[in-house]
Image (cartoon, rainbow, N blue to C red; front, side):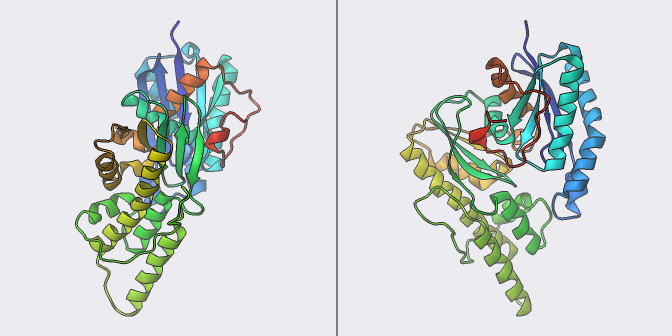
Length: 337
């Protein structure tokens, strides 16, 4: 009998539903809210929740139509339980609970970051032990996996996530939201001419981006008061090489210490061209396999949630209808709910 998983993702500003059948992706529908939030310079949680509520049934119907599947046919329904925006997560979990109740289907809670890691399986199989470099608007973590569904956080940000830092630095330079795309673009045209701090330049695997962000904000304000003009390409290049450089330095150190066979990128910032180029270049000729997720997997989607859910289904990891969201859910505690 075929295994059909319906997955829902609503952790931030994308409403998404995907359907896989025996790990074949039949449908992956995403409704993004980026244009709505751009004018605010970031995601507005209340607006995001309302738009999820408006879009979820539309996206669900489109996915079912594309897959030519009825809700009665699915084996289980999965949803992102966390981390994410509490109101946005509630929309997805309530939709999943409703389907589970009405059609008597198992309910599978999935960790959002596990989804980003497993999105790489749409490229090729994971090999262990591996290092997952998880970089996004809300998270910055180095995660060691020794086997499937086994996550150990060896390093994480102590304050801002790298993606959040990109957005705030872009704003002070007058660049549009989300900030990762314009900074990456301008960085290619500039040179590393600005001296910027490298926070937490130590032997740990932890990160800190608040100091880097604050130094650029202060520098921009001081230059403005003096009537001096910022060289946008040069500042973008300087910032990106420091921000990504921290990720590269600590990741390459972890690769050696943990003797990994594979390195995977995960999360929205994994779309960054400098990070993608440098991680491949610096691991070239080491024998260590590198997976770069396809661009459609870097942004939030439900196909990645379905990948994790398929493995959890095989292990019979189900939740009852009393489960709630957890906006701060840690990936190494993903079985606790």
